[in-house]
Amino acid sequence: AQSVSQHNHHVILSEAASLELGCNYSYGGTVNLFWYVQYPGQHLQLLLKYFSGDPLVKGIKGFEAEFIKSKFSFNLRKPSVQWSDTAEYFCALYTGGFKTIFGAGTRLFVKA
Amino acid sequence: SAVISQKPSRDICQRGTSLTIQCQVDSQVTMMFWYRQQPGQSLTLIATANQGSEATYESGFVIDKFPISRPNLTFSTLTVSNMSPEDSSIYLCSATGLSSTDTQYFGPGTRLTVL
Image 1 (spheres, rainbow over the protein chains, first blue to last red):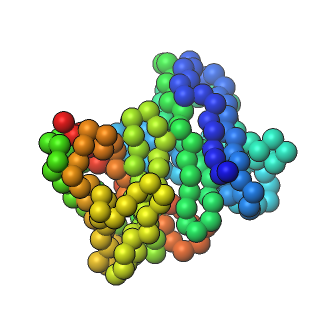
Image 2: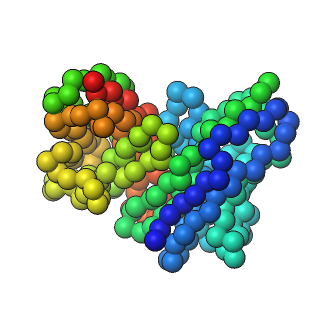
């Protein structure tokens, strides 16, 4: 079955703390993975994506994610979070036929 | 890039009525989609809106309940018919190009509450 799992539904961090949000997927085809972010009151927007090549993908605003095939994981990281990173983060998997399935989302709150 | 707008941004409706949500993209795109995000849950694809033909619905969603139109490359509507409180959700319009590597863009969503 095709699925995307995000381990944490809510994460609270202080500014300057390091961030890692877990994402695991289940899919038998070619893996195309994404992280999307939704800031309060704003549209869902793409943070970064992995299609092939270097498994360490760098995105906007200092975020990166590492694709580990053996662990079926695509964790999102940021070495030092800011208050402005408060948002909801979604991991997503492209399953072909223009369809993307999303994880349940992780709400991140960064304390100033 | 593409900017997507939706109308209305939110609405409160009575049980048994219908609501039509409009989605407008500021540039020509190939694929348009409608998603639902129920409280505390992830985005679920309702259907792919096909230009000039019937939408392609995902399992669990039917045309009678969620009729969709896409008269041209930049505009689509989703109607939530005969609403019940279980339809209370955020409905999102999305658009992308033809390739799996194309970025998928999302509208701001329509927050629907059914009483």
